Length: 400
Ligand code: FAD
Ligand code: UDP
Image (cartoon, rainbow, N blue to C red; front, side, top):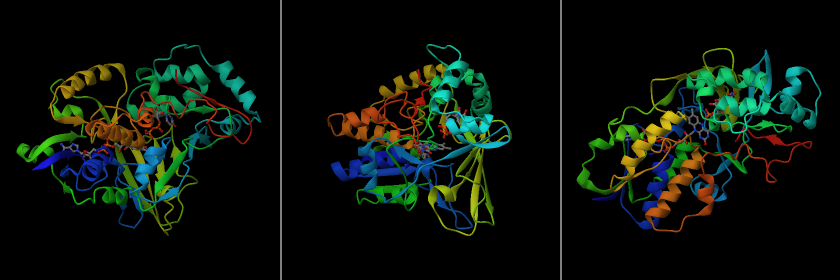
């Protein structure tokens, strides 16, 4: 008899399994229907021996010391600050938009104040932006929105930004400084031996049994007392209220017989091509290899569920499933798909640790509540703890 059945060996499931086993001495069975642990953060060596992320590029970043220290028990880290270039008007420019982006695009030599003035002059008035279109146009105006956001968002979601919550585009700031990093969190690093090795160490506790290639419906319900479910919430309830929309991606990998393929880790293509972005993994992993592997991301409506789609009608449908979930005894729903939230890895870890605190009847940890707050605007808020720019300047938030 197991104390807990954990469905899914991604961040949500693995963190909870590790905590329940190591802190409460519980016997835990982890099942995943895939043939590997790690969920969507799974990485592996491809046929050429290049370390790749099977489900698209995963870069770890968090503002929470507790989460970073928690994961540090299971991995060493390779310091890594992510940078992205966007191909716009036949130029490769830094993204998120910063002072250099504006200057390279327009052939100007503006400073932070002039760029701030440019955003202000061009922005349209949306005092309470509800959609991603309003959030971006309300801060930087329509021209930059059309160059960097509209096309990318349409490809990524199959929806116009006017049909998506403001929080989607608000994940990406527009800056009035020279910071060309994608994230500004205090902790930014990649697991030194990869994500999968980190998950294997988390799950190596003697109280934990892992069975791969197993759907939870194959597990005898009499063999466990409680369940943590981290798969899609609508699937758990057999789509009783209809399917919750999830966005999927077709990942197309290519290995090239050269050490470097492109001039940065990720190149975004907002306007041309069917794919949104191209990632070259060796930039992220630091691996030294005479070949290199890249991945193109083609968003699709069908396929594995990767992204919840943040818009009001989907939130309404999710609420119905949440009521069912709350009324289901002895089952906890945790993670990106089980709670239908556009969460990064650190937020899922925070949610899992907070769930563990509840199960163990600990007091809520304010640090976890903060990491997990929704919508999350830590990448876009202005504040004294923000990055120190090379020259004075500040960042513009798309957040309401
Ligand atoms: P998952 O990783 O989805 O794990 C759920 C597991 O449950 C899966 O392995 C699934 O097989 C299993 N499962 C489902 N149903 C069943 C069932 N019935 N029986 C058995 N097993 C089942 N976050 C970042 O912080 N940084 C990034 O750079 C980043 N990049 C991303 C890029 C892409 C393309 C995507 C899709 C996501 C990215 N994320 C990133 C988000 C990150 O992947 C998630 O936050 C995190 O992996 C979610 O963990 P989870 O445990 O909630 O879910
Ligand atoms: N986005 C965009 N242009 C870009 C990058 C992002 O319009 O070049 C928008 C798009 O709607 C995207 C959202 O911002 O879905 C969030 O981007 P992020 O890079 O956080 O997406 P993820 O890494 O989760 O796919």
